Length: 531
Image 1: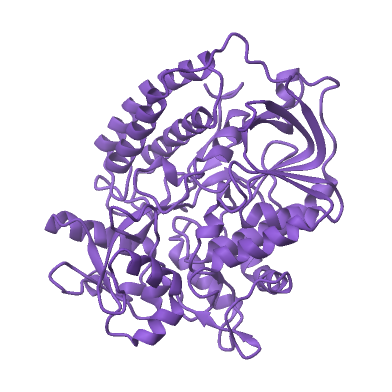
Image 2 (image 1 turned 60 degrees about the horizontal axis):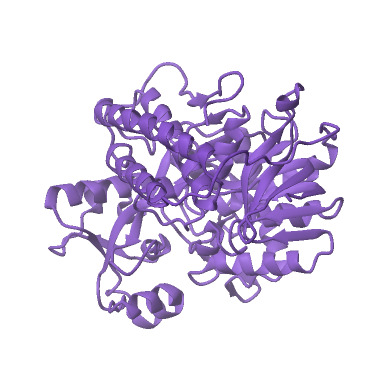
């Protein structure tokens, strides 16, 4: 028998945005957090770099704003950038008060520099900042009596008043309990999507396995617009090794003097950007992609051997230990690296308080499109965004009015049966990820995008049929969401007839001039898109 639970605020996702929101919102209501695996299975936990904040003498919010807008390539929302940059530092201090052990020099934070920044302003904990932030937030959440954390639970679909003849308002979600197979009806005054990104749409990604675009897909299905999904940030340096799945080589290595070299040992970044290795991520990723296509080699190399070996080991202990276990001593050996899908700059359209177009539905963190990142994200602005907009949403959400039908229909499996053909899911997933990498990856063309569109249309029909015929599992839910997000990325990329930021197309190599640059907004058709 499927069950029902009720809370004030339902949070879907357990990264920095979801956990920070929960702590703030628990001051005035009950919070339930659902997360697909354990709370540490998040992009936050694997974030190496840090949190960008104008805290140093000689730095200023104005300089941080300028760097953000420059890297955003004309599409940042200036008001949102100003808000995030000015409010961010106090949330860094709040994390420290919660117990996050950031690196310090005496009483002040030790700051590092990353690509696109004009000065050192990245607060960090060695090379494992996200893990330390996650540790502090999970501990605080575990000790809060108003917060319930439900691990091993996957959100399937949002509950919408439109299904009951009312306005398109959200009042919770259907949630699958992986252990029992039961679908729980979670009712809430407000539902907060903090589901992270969708790197698993691509075959090569730095993201954890849970990054399947669930929030974007669920929100779009009930009518929420999405924007700028063509702007997928490919991190320039993911470790290239057969036994190193999704292991990121932090941009901070280049910030501390690492040099990118071809297989012949020659440095090449000065040929692509005046800041060389410290150029924006989109430039560095395209440069590496170009070098690999020219040479036919499998990777380029990041060289740290000219730096003090003791400093490298102390500053990057996680990366040093991981590489050493694979036979690479980063103090002496060049690190083989390739680009990998890393961060979605687009997402569910949300305002300065995290509100979407759907009453009762909020989106925060990477799953949201606030306008902060524009066409390309400045390094370490992601954790900053998660903190700032989680806090603002938690303050705003108390004003959310209660909307729900008198009786909520429980989940219905109908005549669905257990699948005995799970290979279909695996094959469809693999096909999507491979053609997205080949056709809608770092460098695009209209022909490649058209090929991707043809393939995703066929696959979505197959997946929809499979979804309705068999009892749901997390794999089926994720495949359905990956397919929809892939469709949205393809449509967004096809509509942008210029090269800007992270969207680079050989058919339109220049930027459109004249009118102000526009966001690519996709609005679901009335009644929602097909499943």
